[in-house]
Length: 206
Image (cartoon, rainbow, N blue to C red; front, side, top):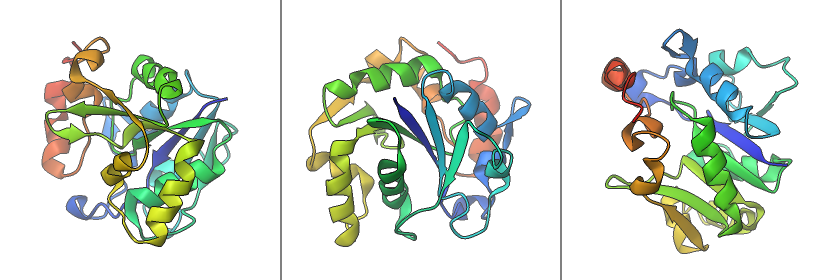
């Protein structure tokens, strides 16, 4: 069994505190698009942190009664993506979890399958482009739970620093290009301007 975790516990300060997972892209909310793609490759989908503070749960609310999706609160709240990953690793039903940010509209099933297939190579599988690591579109195995918990306890919260603690399989831009343009596969929405700019990526699949 394999799991996926949509990390939805961020404050979205650059987007006015809105629930970015509920933003509509090409007729569907981002979270609906993500669940549809991830359902094709995993058995267990979690939306993590979406209701930890009772706010910005619009995107997750559609899945409250779903047997496909579980809503998971952060166990150690207020510590950013690392706390979301910690909750996902603790609660996942599979032996590996694909963690994605809730504001990535172009999560792709074939690319997700490829990342998950590489988890036998190392405890972490993470894309890397000229923008650096992309830890919120990456696979983590159970071997990551202890080092993640230790980092939380020490308040060493930078997620990309985890890769210094555990063996990591890097996925290059050239590898990603088999599944589409890396800029599209890894696109996320941090600001209203980035949301407005998604139109330029709609047809940029290859």
